[in-house]
Image 1 (cartoon, rainbow, N blue to C red):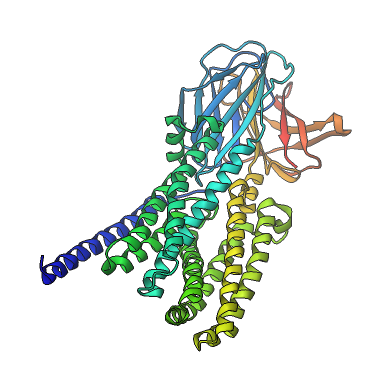
Image 2 (cartoon, rainbow, N blue to C red; image 1 turned 60 degrees about the vertical axis):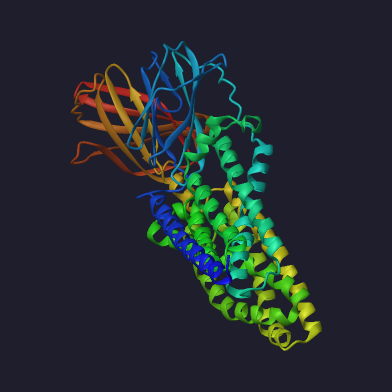
Length: 545
């Protein structure tokens, strides 16, 4: 083959690769749009259950129902009988935000546990249990709630290595293509980081499936585990991350003419992968939070990814590294501004109140991250305004100091990765506030009358009680008066009585009600049916702290 023919073939291949990169970039953007649900609130909260928690029923129910604060996808539904044996519940239907579950058998007397595990809109598994009794309560069945430390550690490690692949790998590939412009210092490190990400991404998907199902590590190879992981929004993150990692690798080992386009598409893929799932991405308003996460992720990849190639270039070939250093120092100010702005917006949305910084695990991790960022920004500012200019001028000792400083920056960034991976196991204060605002609800059913009682919010303090009453056979009940009576004898609290007011929609409501202490209360409704008849129905209701 002649030299001219070889150049023509290479150019043609480069153009095709360029169009391929554009297509992959478009696919990433499309996936980011597809993964954005219309409405989502991180960590779904159980609003009502039927039978309600603590209810004593006269006979076995035909079905169960769980209503959440947002649509969910059931993963594991189990009924634990009084003798401790577990019965899988596999027949269920989704009706909006309610999961309707068929009861496969007639239940005997005693206390049963309805255990549920679902996937919320942010891709994280949420679980809980509802206790109810048939006939009369007995000792509660033993239900294990032990935390699988091994699985949690594996999830955390997988998350850290995925960050290494995306931020140091794909971000490093972008730095080599756009800032080094031909320099190959740090290429082996970047390839190794990308390979770490290529291993960690699918492994994290399997670990997500285990966590979703509440299964141990030994079940990692089972197909159902991987299907469960793919069924969560984190599945989209892994798919987009794999595309981004592949693009970053192509920019390093593919044709030089398409390297910059591949690297740019890979950097965009990093932002899209992070925006596809997670606490911040699931927060409202998503028209703001998802772009903020996208920009934040891409900014981290730009900064963190450039450090190792730049440090190695300054160490090995300081003369050739000078243009690299100049381009990085010119761009980093804008990148840091974007990181600071997006980080502040996301933190305000997630934390909401300053007190949550100390009062929640999420806030405490954020404080640790902010402390690390303070040192990182201080070190970066010193490098930018004190060391960069002398290093560009060729001062050998300053160049050595800058290399050491870059190494310290890398250590701080790795520590930040570890802290950020810990957020996987916490609920943001915003989600906790949503859960706290959920009502405590019970359904009371007797032959003479039945009622749905909701106390909003379902925790101590000023609350509002809403009541819907019916006859025992689900017919309309035109009561003359309804009184709510809350009592908690074990706490020495005498009954709290409040008359309800009938609303225009047929419901009864009590506004001037205060619940002083948390725990299990007895809620009684005194329903005046006529001048000569009062129907009293009651059931336990749990009030949160």
